[in-house]
Amino acid sequence: MVFSGKPSGACHACRARKTRCDQVPEGCGQCKNAKRVCPGYRKQGDLIFRDQSSNVVHKFKAREAREAKKVASAPTPDNIGSQEDAALGSRETSLEIVQQQEPPLFVRYAVAPTLEDLATGFFHFHYVLGIHGPSKGHFYNLVDIARDQKIEDSLMTSMKAVGLAAYAHTTRTPSLLQNARYQYMKAIQLTNAALNSPEDVTKDSTLMAIHILSIFETVTGCRQRSLQDWSKHLHGAAAVIKLRGPGQIKSRPGRHMFMHLASQLMIACMQDNRKLPAYIREYMDAAIMEVSTPEPALIIQHCMMQYTDLNSDIQNKVITDPETIISECLELDGFLLAIVTNTPDGWEFETVFTDVESDLVYDGRYDVYYDYWIAQMWNALRTLRAMLNEQVRNTLLAGFSSKPPYFTEPQYTAQFQISTELLYQIEDDILRTRGASSNKQTWEFGEIGTRNEQVF
Image 1 (tube, one colour):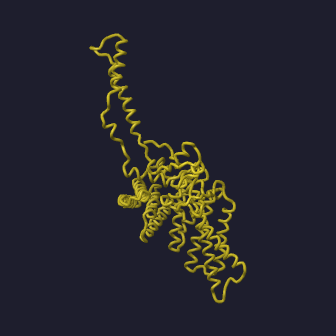
Image 2: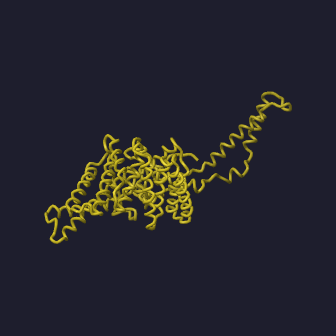
Image 3: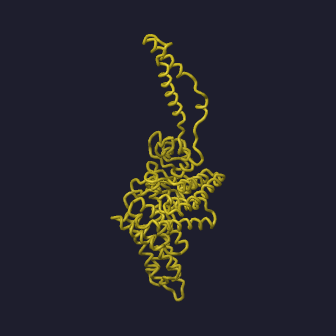
């Protein structure tokens, strides 16, 4: 089985004509405009592996024919004659061998991928995204680990667990979840063994395994305990980050893995209404200093870090002054608004209008982004702005209803209206997220459940 590039998600008609396909679930727009029936789309999961059995059989037959020809043309005491007779005999012998029927074993049977191979391939196909264009990638560190180090058993088993769980949901095969949970428990045992090893505890593969195990909880979680297990995985990853020290942010791959885990840890801390560990904030500031010009994604994450601590202070009554709460929230929102009003290069998205009625299309239109990572960053920004403005709105409402009333000046009423309208706008923007255009990294809206690991 060979890697032949990422298969196109376009319909057959658009692939044959090499035209851009918008991949609308009910039938693409190109076919609709051409007044032809859309032939539909291929299942991406079935294209992960390609059956090369016929090519293998063909090569085997050709090699056997060449070897038989050499044996037949070798001189023997019983085979002495002219060069013409020898050549003729050789050709006849070769012809006979080529025409002979092969045993049915090579025709009837083909090497099929095991369930574990399918799970690993499914994980790579749906979760690993390389760096290209404005995209900073997703789990691309796996390539670096495979090239420079070794994919430890704990990491490989965690990928199998997540791949099986995601594949079970995609194919609606609950029976596969039992296999996924077996791999999950096995991965936990292997990871615990790595954590108890002074040599393995600081390896990239160990930290990556913990991160992937946290994804398993988001894919399969349907109980409160799943949320607790997810949080435990992240706090365990935070302890490993501390052991790895500040040197991990010097390299781009190390910095990328740290930032990715830190963003997940922020969610866990916000859920528990507590601040980030001091060393995480220290490493985050150092990571930003490593970049000459802060990237938009770093600005978003830094604002998220600031709000995580601010939320902890508000919920634990460290900050109680309403005006201070509003001013600090609006200050952070201002940094995010600057990204929205001055869209970074490559972050542009296209709004597509359609008459197709589908559960995957919201309000007759959807937004198409460069790839999954860009869409993820936009929704991270929107979600953070929603939390900030919801905090502003709730603080203003509490002031309006207090006795005597607080925030009686007109600017507070105007801010209340601005924050309320923004929350509705953000809701629409997130629901219209569909993914990437067909000529770039394919990521359909329907795969959001598979690409389950969001930044926020």
